[in-house]
Length: 86
Image (cartoon, rainbow, N blue to C red; front, side):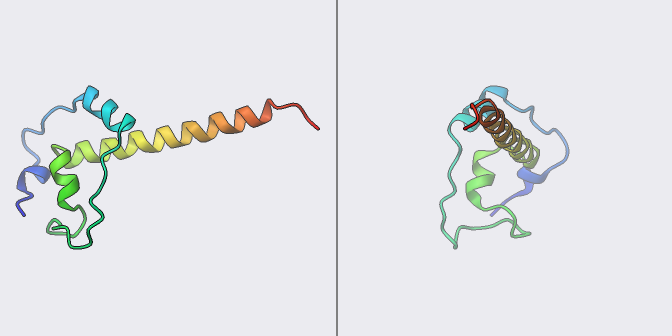
């Protein structure tokens, strides 16, 4: 598997904000195949390196997912705190 473009450090393409929003709304699914070809370090399978244009895009996406999950927890806690006591 050729991962050179996924990891290259020159001419990193800009992050497509609309694409990231689409990924947040409809997360890309991994194939789940243990034999899916992995990169040289064994970190990312082809499912990731073909969906995201660059490693920085994937890391940005993971950061967005983290914020989304944390925000959902905060909303849930606030919602529970606003419920009347029994």
